[in-house]
Length: 57
Image 1 (tube, one colour):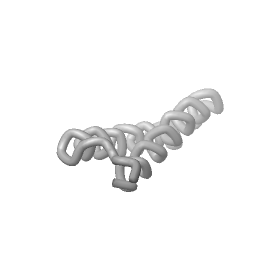
Image 2 (cartoon, rainbow, N blue to C red):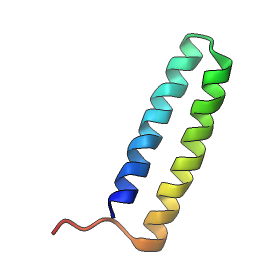
Image 3 (cartoon, rainbow, N blue to C red):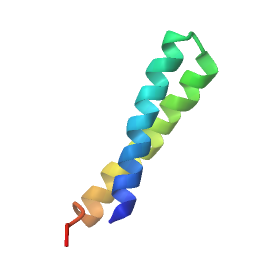
Image 4 (cartoon, rainbow, N blue to C red):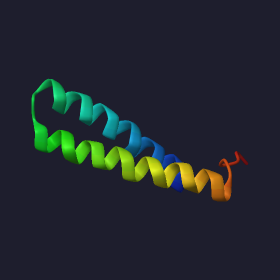
C-alpha cells in the first residue's frame, strides 16, 4: 500500500507548488500544480476507498 503514501505525498507537494506559483504570479506553473493536486489527490482518495488504509506490519 505504498502507492497511497506516494500519491498523498505528491498531492501535498502539488498544494505547496500551487501556492508558491500563485505567490510568484506564475500562471502556467499554478495550472500544472493544480492539475497535479487534482489528479493525484483523486487517485489517492480512490485508492484508499477501494483498497483501504495501508497497514503497518
